[in-house]
Length: 206
Length: 99
Image (cartoon, rainbow over all chains, first blue to last red; front, side, top):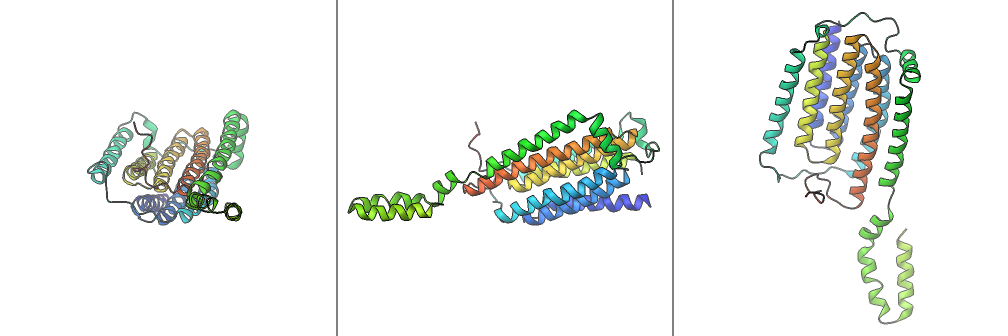
């Protein structure tokens, strides 16, 4: 039974990962990542990590993926050019990834850690439960917990600063031709026209 | 199931993510592949937590999730800023910082 659950989760996770890399449309890549994350949450449940699995589904597959879906819909599909800066990159990259996998597998299978060939020790009741994880977070890992909350705060402020700055982009991009032509043309013939044009331009900026 | 299975699966997922980072050009998909790699690391952490019978690895996995969320927020903010300035959404064309 555990084997069936493991292989179902593993196949789902691998299929989702391959889908993220292989699908052309970024929107479908995001959806494939959702499949991957839900399958991984199932594997976490098999490893007695209930709270991590719940956080995976709620935080990752829920919140973070909504952010990704929003940005993928906002940016739209980006066509990837055929032009390659490094010749043979599309052939070399899978080879390097396969070499990395072989290397990691050798490291895992040839390790001296003896307990890896077993299912692990029998765990007490409540292993990985929200109560146990919460106790650990608020007692032994309190500093880590506070540092993580600080990091989230800094990231939120950084995102607002990065994405919310609209004055230079709107002025430089959309209104640049109108402003370059507008004041120059009417100011020469008569001053009254320039005032109207400026008012019109100022009304268009916000 | 042996813990080794989980670790090999984690290595496979990490390799797929690394290959995706190398192949794809769109910064959005590269962020997605980074998520794959971070989740492979999470799987290894939780598997080792099961292997040792210790919950510290699960705390590590939760903190990795927090860091991944921060990385996503900042990365997506950068992508939105690039899109607003009509910069090309292609990591090979964003080469102004290249020496």
